[in-house]
Amino acid sequence: MPRKKHPPVDREAARTIGGLLRGLRKASGYRAVKDAAVAPGCPAAQQTIYAYERGGLVPSLQQFLQLVEFYSLKSTKAPDLDQDRVRYMGVAAVHAALASPAYHVREALSLVERLQPAPAPGRRRRAAAPRKS
Image 1 (cartoon, one colour):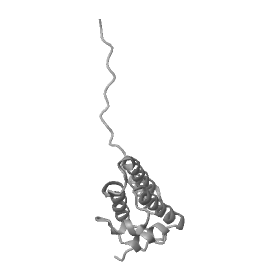
Image 2 (cartoon, rainbow, N blue to C red; image 1 turned 120 degrees about the vertical axis):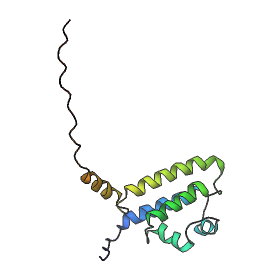
Image 3 (cartoon, rainbow, N blue to C red; image 1 turned 90 degrees about the horizontal axis):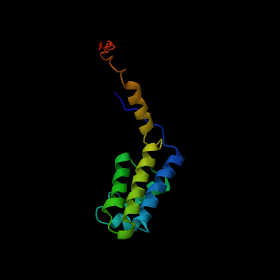
Image 4 (tube, rainbow, N blue to C red; image 1 turned 30 degrees about the vertical axis):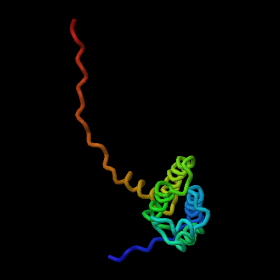
């Protein structure tokens, strides 16, 4: 069975995801994409990060999560005082990406909801008879 071609991601959604990555990169202490790309453990090349941040390409969900993890947890560039802030920004970035139409999570949750079977009828208890005193 041939794969179904997915419609292109809305440009606004692509820019939003790129902006999330750019803000997270800067908050983690990397002023330039080049600095992040040459850091040990960076999961993407310089040109790829540029393309993501400009909204020209949309990373796969896995690639997005790897970049967020790198900037939020594995980066040693951010000062210790800002580390909690960067982690919170990482949580917000993942949440915003999952809510974005780019990754179709809402559609997946909607499908799961429609697939749920009706609850099985349970056993009913009979009404308790009044006690005699």
